[in-house]
Length: 436
Ligand code: UD1
Image 1 (tube, protein in one colour):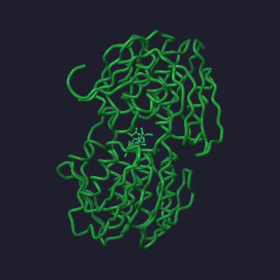
Image 2 (cartoon, helix red, strand yellow):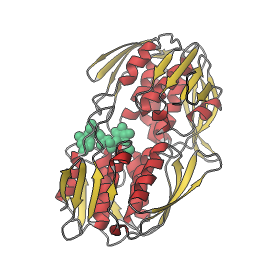
Image 3 (tube, rainbow, N blue to C red):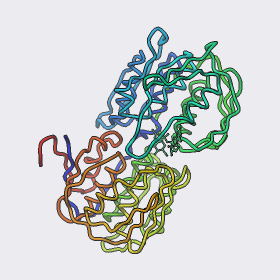
Image 4 (cartoon, rainbow, N blue to C red):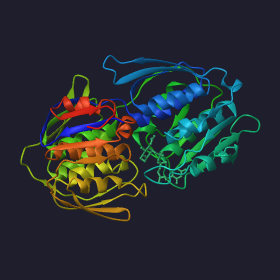
């Protein structure tokens, strides 16, 4: 099993190019099911979740060609979904269990083929993560759904979903994406209310519009979709990954230094940059040759101020950056109260941070961090994707050697994290298998 070994205590300096957004790429790949294609997606990050999603589509009968970028950190995939109805249209447990986002094939399959069999994703380290919102809304569009032997068995009598006016009980990124895709080929005008407004949904709307979908309300909580008979081929480049960008901003804030991020949308990381600004970092936006850049500076010896954080749906502070921001708060003077409102079990990184020397307490959905604490390197265990990134950040801060074990979690969502950090002066390297 691979691990990362980090010699901490150094500041970071240099430039990092942010990759394509994993969480935008996943629904865009699922959208490839909605037309014969080819749907050609560029800027897909070369991470295991993307490989899994492409395998799910191949398992459904799609032809997928992959072209890696010269640096191997991204790929372009061309998806052709032709005559899939001849097959089983089944997304099996073996793939789905490694990645919940596989449920995103359900809406497109029902919309285009009127049937689907998708494994239930099951539990997840960060909380229960049910799919009731997806299923209830698809049923309202006319899908008949049963749960049989752990699978969502769904069919649409008559073959075509019906439009509806629907208000989601809770804001859900995945349910918004699934229903948005389903509605593009439905009969009539669908209105989805209380939608999530994450930038990844805007990217999906953008892709679907290029395929010929009729959607109004992009970037708002109400999406109005006029169903069309067919969708066509298109080419699309995935937006930059705001969570990856945010992770590097947190790394620079916690370890100190002067880092410039290339290929970033500053608006997408505003909740974090405002926080880091209030903590005492200097953030500057400027226009570079390849688009906007974001620079973060924290001079050696400059003290950070503790600030409170509450996670909530976009544009508020993202749950996917809560863990990384906690690592920053271990280095800030004062008390930081961190409230997690999206997932019920998302503080597993806290115990590992304590092992490195952080001073914190968990009380239900609230973490209280008292800083600044000197961190000392030791061996820590990654428990989920973003928790792993947090331990890397803490390792960059800690004196001595930190070994982060079980980094297959990290490989689900970060392409070249170790090489990108090496590029800004971090002493970090990957050790494959065995003991260190
Ligand atoms: C997506 C992101 C994930 C991020 C999360 C919240 C992807 C691939 N993943 O996950 O990285 O942390 O948004 O920003 O884009 N819920 C229900 N019933 C449902 C669906 C969700 O109760 O049917 C609840 C969840 O348990 C959670 C909340 O709604 O408490 C938000 O979850 P949701 O936005 O659906 O997260 P995902 O789409 O799974």
